[in-house]
Length: 126
Length: 67
Image (cartoon, rainbow over all chains, first blue to last red; front, top):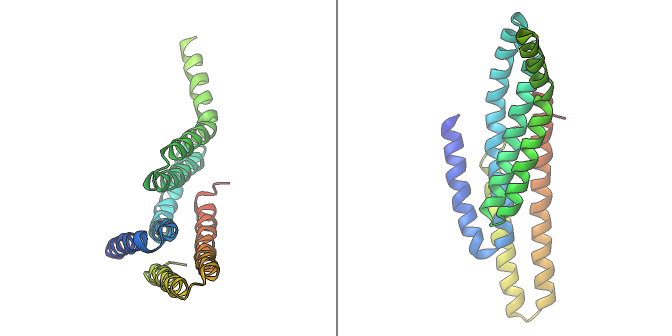
């Protein structure tokens, strides 16, 4: 699996470098396409990890935290992808905005857990 | 639905073709058709990439039940 990813990455960068001279607009699309080709391959591996964690979390009390954890991983996954593409083509401000939006999204998802922890600590302290 | 290397070669092919067509049309001084050909090539690749993005998002939704 990793060999395929490496081959696609290298050939993708060669194609992007070549397209930069011929057609600069197309090089952005080629980068996005290569990124998606690699991401889709990684997602299949990630789903295997997801199932094994799911079985593990049913036994313990992780069943509340685990879906939120997977969502956070998904958001981090996507925002890193988008912001690195924006960085590649020079628009640093856009990439910062995408990262900021990702952080806000993660915070919103993690909020219930944080509140639960705070309540637990408050109960202990009393 | 895994994307192999052929997607990247397809995009490279379309890019080279549009560049060649562009040069030919410019040499035979048909500038406006050249720009149209470039835009057409760009749209084809854009449609392909949008298709890939929607595939990626459906996979993400299935695995991470993100949104």
